[in-house]
Image 1: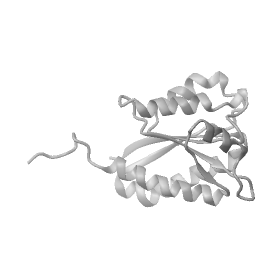
Image 2: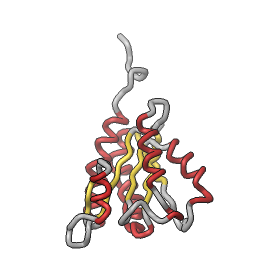
Image 3: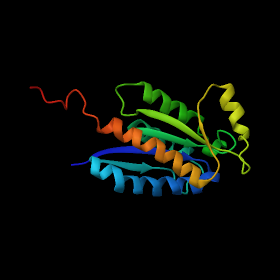
Image 4: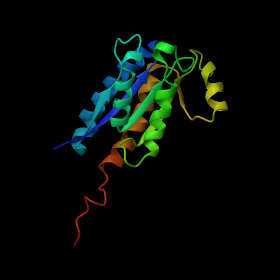
Length: 166
């Protein structure tokens, strides 16, 4: 039986390519590393929802039920119809709550095409919110492939209740 863990990837409209790459990368990771380790990661994301406000309760339920949260914003937290600051802060709070499955919330921020920092980077720096920069879809996928093995190692490690006593 596989251990199933959900990963919520929240993306701005401008990051549809990254949302698709997240699904593709996660599927490949499951095939090559997750299945052999007995763990499957289930992708969760918003598809074709222009205004998430009517679904905000469901979005928050999903965040609370996920093991990991990845935010890929554009040049800010987003428009009122698709704002992510509250969701990201909820994911951080969930990661800090040992009663919830959330283990980590992180942010991947796309740089300018020439590699210079995103205008949003200054806002995040001022708020002391960590993020990982990337420039291309390939960079984004490589960042995921650095993160996912660490998560898999943590999720595959036996917990105290899994240990066999001699």
